[in-house]
Length: 53
Image (cartoon, rainbow, N blue to C red):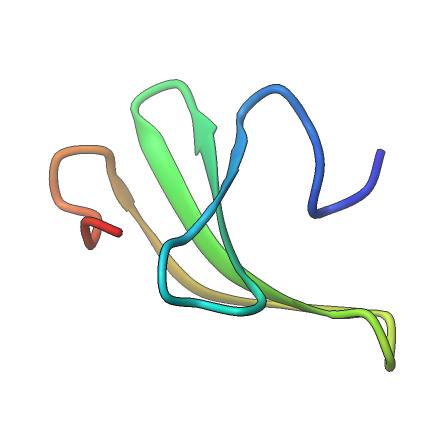
């Protein structure tokens, strides 16, 4: 599975490389750098508290 594609993954609006992954009541916000093949997680929070994108 790619970090940019999956059933609970959505692309963030206004972010060229930002994504949201929802796991139960949690949201994980992260960026994918395809060139260096890295993923940088910048927020893990309860679903109601996560930044709205």
